Image 1 (cartoon, helix red, strand yellow):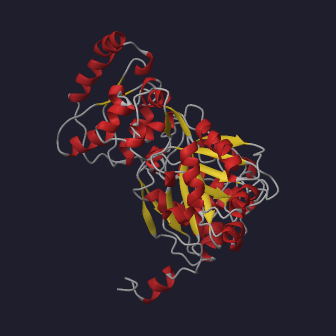
Image 2: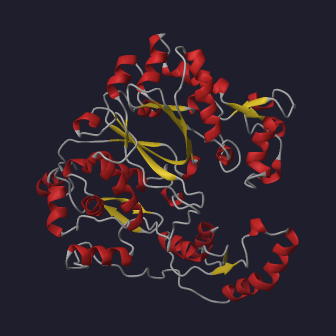
Length: 472
């Protein structure tokens, strides 16, 4: 609605955006990120999901409508200026480590843990190692309207404790956040999904990312600090704080980088996760998506694929709930859960020659739920699908594949994704344990997006010295 309001205002049409209580600051920050400060808002007297239709209408007439009328009679300039912020090279604080820690926490610049002070000298040294132009722009953070530069990436990298050689990974993720596909503007939605970075290719070994026991836990510098960098960058550049865009009801802890076991993948002849997005095993790639829920699938018992697939599929089902509105509802055919399996499980498939595609096909056939439950999850229970049509109705309209409507029996089993390739698979973890993790993703609210990680020394500054237009 805010995007529609901004478009209307720019066309000279006054508008007022309706928001639920508690979302006022997020709405104003969103408007600012779209380049339009001071959006006119009308606040409902209570969240609509907890009201009857009569109570909603009565509250709107008594409480909200007067705000709408008042808002439409107040003129605001189209080119309203955004609030001033410190410049990139401004010294914003000085003092002892304890004093800086207290100040950064008070101002919302830190995640609450101790950090490395991002002095100008530290940030310059961090960038110099790879030769990038500090002021090269990667784009604009749509949620906040702030420019994303190599400098801003490096500032948060220093704070997080990253090493200079990690900068290519940070830049690749920053480019994802600046792009249109991932949807960074949704990062603060109320379900609190959190971003997961998956690293694939030679960069895993080159930069010392851990992929063995405890692969998804803090404790290894590269994985932990780069994971922390993302949360700091979202906070400080994209504006995801409780005062602005982060409206997570509960939220999730920041996730360390998940690095794939490239040796096991090569042994099996399987593509990495990045292979699902067009990359080859020789490419260094970071893939980003937002994860809603994670279910541990422990002690997977069995020596054949036929024995273990049902348990893995059950984990995928247990991790999946309202996320099915990304199969139909909030999105169409956009739900892509991730199954992380240990090398032992992967080798159980490889021992009998199964390809990753065969595993996906078997999981697709087994990861099913009753049709009535699917319909409840996308409609009755979540209230996120207009009309609450049955799967038979949706299939007849061409909105879901025919496999969802093979009969009208409410107990019939239907898949949780629209095709086998929508179940993504990654390999990492303790090679001597048969465990797996099923992760539900948040569809287009943090769409799976991959980016090449370029670890070669940058020619940014050399080009600037030789030719202002570098390559022109």
